[in-house]
Length: 245
Image (tube, rainbow, N blue to C red; front, top):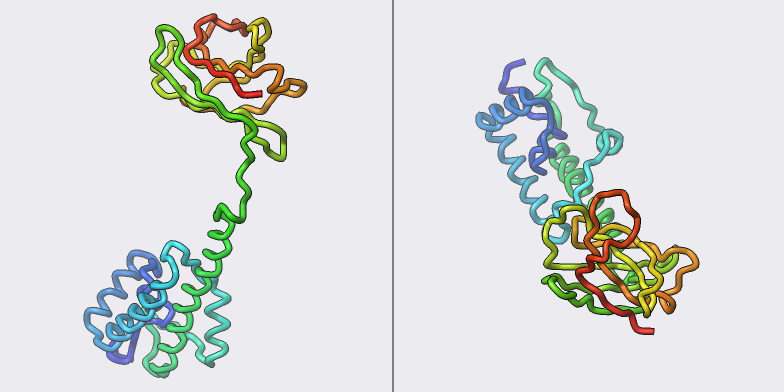
């Protein structure tokens, strides 16, 4: 069989048209060499690429889901096309009907894109705000800087299925020599509850401790704590705010 009787495998051409890597570097190089010399295969890859571009106009490219080998086998069985492997894995005998391969590859290409669109639709729907209820905000307040501080921020208490959470966001904090701790205080400042340290020195999400009510501990305080193992408040507060009753 001469090189002129060989053409690229339909599955390989479909993957090339989709911009996928259809094999090993040697196989890809062999395919590109063949395309450069074979006007028939090159034209069919171009035609299939045009089909893919048209399909992508209605389906985001990042939603493409590669078809498993079973899909290719089913398409080949449906069209009565069985692959015949030769010495060069990048090519197959010319005796395949060229129109049939193009129909198979086009169907597979569009199937990949449409299938990907279905996956995208399912995943994007899950990301839509309308399908995932946002946590209800129970209370919110600004965090104002205390004397000597240039920081400021905000706090929200939100309702979740696991119970209330306290969301704290502070800006203007310098890199600490230690860490920043979030506290809940009563109105008189006589009692306090530690919630935890800010993540990345600026934000934090904390579960409301069991038995602690926002009405009893409405004051939110952020302090700079040294890494000395002492669990108590350092008395070095930077921002503070009071949640409404």
